[in-house]
Length: 144
Image (cartoon, rainbow, N blue to C red; front, side, top):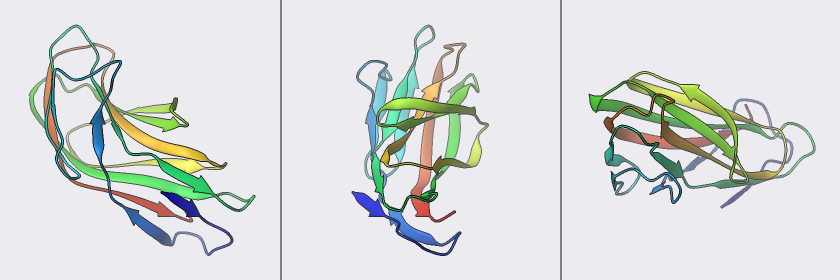
């Protein structure tokens, strides 16, 4: 999927993007089930990282700011330590990390150059055991 922004007014949602989650190859969760746009089971034992990634969105267009990519989801910690992070990617490389608590979450990437942008959820630095789900997951591209 590619979004060409051209010149537009700011803060207009240009597109709602269907989210798909995949378990990471290098740091997979021990158990990972993600039908449709939600994660129904992500379980990681203590002592290792677990990482899952959203689908990437290719952004191309104007030479001005290309806007904002946002992911929204409701995070439920079923058991374990509250130590999840959202990791942000551009062209598969981490460009940011944010901690968060359970509940409704919104995380953003300011898109200032062409590239493939995505989000991930990773267990925190403590590598503690964690079991979680996400629901109501959406991704939006805006002129932001």
